[in-house]
Length: 284
Length: 251
Ligand SMILES: Nc1ncnc2c1ncn2[C@@H]1O[C@H](COP(=O)(O)OP(=O)(O)O)[C@@H](O)[C@H]1O
Ligand SMILES: [Mg+2]
Image 1 (tube, rainbow over the protein chains, first blue to last red):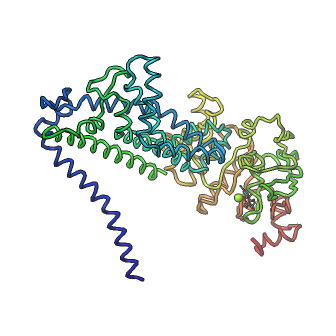
Image 2 (cartoon, each protein chain N blue to C red):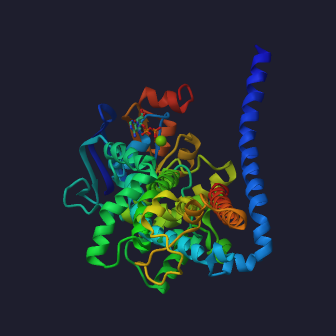
Image 3 (tube, each protein chain N blue to C red):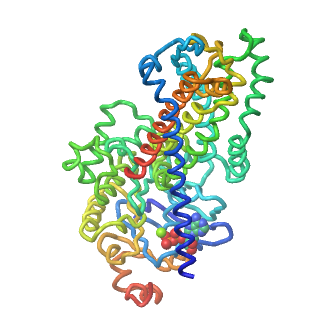
């Protein structure tokens, strides 16, 4: 019995640690594949270079960086009001009955495969944009809206959790001072839940930066530095997915190098989110 | 003496559970009234009927009347926000908001529409003076209220109530999180406040009731068993159950 217990425990321990091993393995692998080309081109020229033409051995990923930034910012702009409204309503105002229906529904959104989102963007958003705003359809705007919906569950559910973690005594105190429910939420509950909500937003940003499939289908994939939300763009992730099939040699290495940039950005976002979420616990 | 608060045949239900049974009580103004009794007897429930915070709980029902200054506070005409301004409440654990000292005290006035900085400054200062916090905190107004010690936090909660111009202060076991010395300081503070306020304090600490209150009510299983001047309750209780409780044979 004792022996068995120990076996199970160490088995679990090894499994748990293997996730770290996998992370390190991925890191080492993409570093090994991608680093040489970064060193050859130079970090600055790689990141700030505006010219991406593998045939001429030009590897500047700045257009893709801009593409990722535009689409992510757009997604956030679109998603933030919606997801905060959802979270505030569900955590503070809805009856338990409505909450029981709405919360799983929002979580279900996270389970829809991204191809389906891409598909919805193509059949619903493209015609709308073509008819009302002009252009062929695939563009920053379309990708931002779809990505915004995709990150809504992440931001919403983390925000709900942090709103619900605010002690009831704050609300009670505020209401007893004659504040309305909304005043209570605005002036006490939201500030108290702020760090958790910000952590949720950062994780949402991470998701938006990393999303590939849906973006390939609706962002247009042109390697240009956009100057309007109706321009098509290519992001860091879609660049890799689009070209990896046929890339060889330095071209292939440059795609791995793009992966390094992504890896670092996502790691940083997650670390920041974790730090912020932790800070909440300390000040409570 | 005219009573500030009158409870007439007050019965209160949580769902089907009767938490208050036909309570009648006249609470005198500018005095401290204590509610004592074993845990679960309905002291907090009774307190919350006086500022209508009970109705934040689902499935509750009230019968009978609660009058403040002769007016039925459960009347449909009553503005609940005005009522909560008039009847402030201090809770068992200090529940200062995670805001600065200043913002905690200014919270009520801001919520009720005071915008001018000078006016807020004045209210904050007056409220902190009245709760004996001003000298210690006047240079720390920007500090987070949560960084203060518990008794300062509890006094800040009282200051928060004074800031909205309450006439009645309800306190629900306000010292249960505090040590004996800081408890005494809060008690002294309450005695100093009764000149201008009507105070109702719930406590399961009989010595506390004896020390601070002018009137005491003993509750048991939702009933107000006995209600009288504190000196009488503690020296010559009329009801056997009160006597048992006070002499420590029960509770
Ligand atoms: N929110 C509630 N829902 C249901 N029953 C409650 C609730 N709050 C209190 N009660 C019940 O009402 C009775 C009185 O509670 P309370 O007023 O908190 O007593 P006290 O403050 O004297 O300890 C208890 O039996 C308690 O279980
Ligand atoms: Mg109680």
